[in-house]
Amino acid sequence: MSFKYLGFALFGLLFALSSTAAEPLVGIKNFHQHSAMLATGGLVEPDALKQLKAQGYTQIIDLRGLDEGVETEQQAADALGLSWHNLPTGGELPSAARIQAFGELLQGGKTLVHCRSGNRVGMTWALWQISQGVDLEAALAEGRAMGMKAGFEQAIRARVQGEANE
Image 1 (cartoon, rainbow, N blue to C red):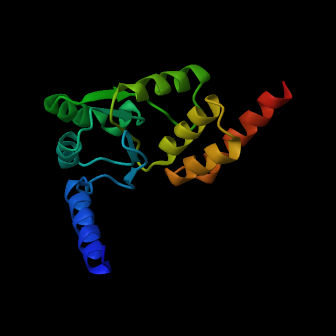
Image 2: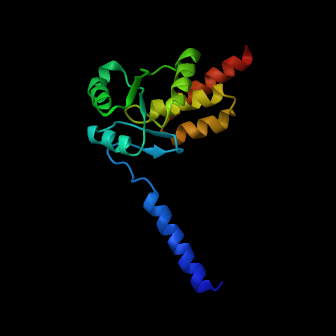
Image 3: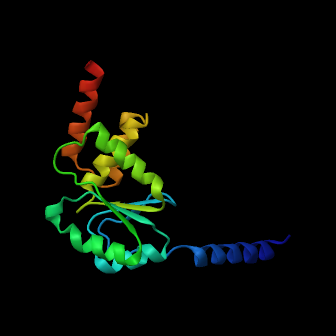
């Protein structure tokens, strides 16, 4: 096969792949697609929920507290047929039971996990990964990639160190 025909074949393949790729999501602060089944971010604008539904998302896990205006998002998600779960997470590390509940929810389909900025998402994800046997440094790196800040990272290190000393 000549290079000319190979070039046309590659172009055709790239065109086909790009035409089937999902449109990028707008209206979600710090949006990151981590896998085919998981995306994370911060605040979600109402119109972004329609985009999520169109891209095959089936559920939202919202880590914001009830005092952070979650009702509007819940109503919009319900109207679109998206499952909406609230696991309020504040400034403290969640319990092992809460992390287990988070992991169980992740099994529910294509999921967006979000909070206000991504900080609590990264922290929760890092703790879930650690609970599944992922190396501490790898779990923290994933948490940082999702938006976790230094304060939660230090708290996770202290918790893991405390558990190691028991």
